Image (cartoon, rainbow, N blue to C red; front, side, top):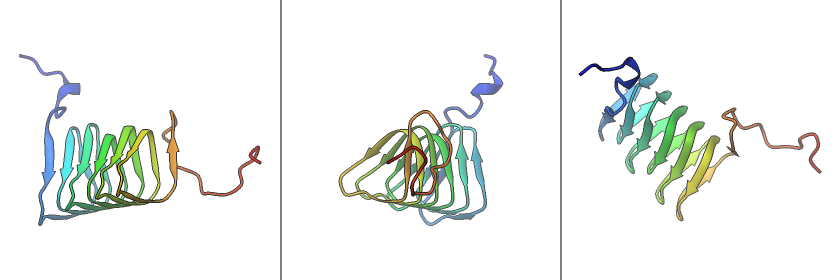
Length: 129
């Protein structure tokens, strides 16, 4: 069976286990699960899950992002962002669909819709009264 280049890594999962600490940028052509500590940006073509014991200090970019642990940084979720009940997010988010479960903690700005640009700083914007 031939494999097309676009399919490489699509179903693969990179796991950062509990007790593992990484510093630097993580790029993945598949999915990523973080149960350890990442200090740096995480970019995935698939989904990123931060488990209850996981922590990320940096930017996250993926199709779907699910947070059960702690994230300090901006999240760009192309399709959907889920903050589970024990999640803590300190930073801005950009996504099409946002799900925040009861008990989750979110401090920052959010931008929803078709645009995946970073949220602008709060304040008076032209045309708003």
